[in-house]
Length: 95
Image (cartoon, rainbow, N blue to C red):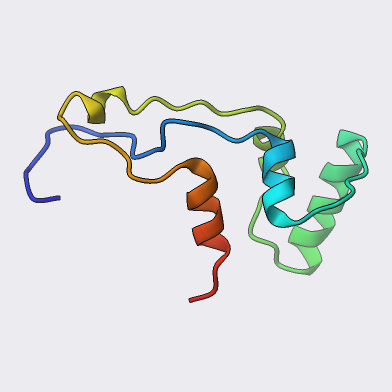
């Protein structure tokens, strides 16, 4: 950023992705729904034995759609250049 903006700003796209859209971008053709207790148990094992980074409590945050406002950033005259899908695809592209 070239100018100093006081405070914190959400640097997020205008849109959001639902799980179905995320799975499609990831190329998942078939997803099996599993009980939340089983997912938490599996994530606990992964964290304990495979040193996975995501804490089992992180599963709960994955259950809900997140909608974050960038209105404060837009008030400064700035706007995001990429969509949520673009950002996900970029994150999946090897450097």
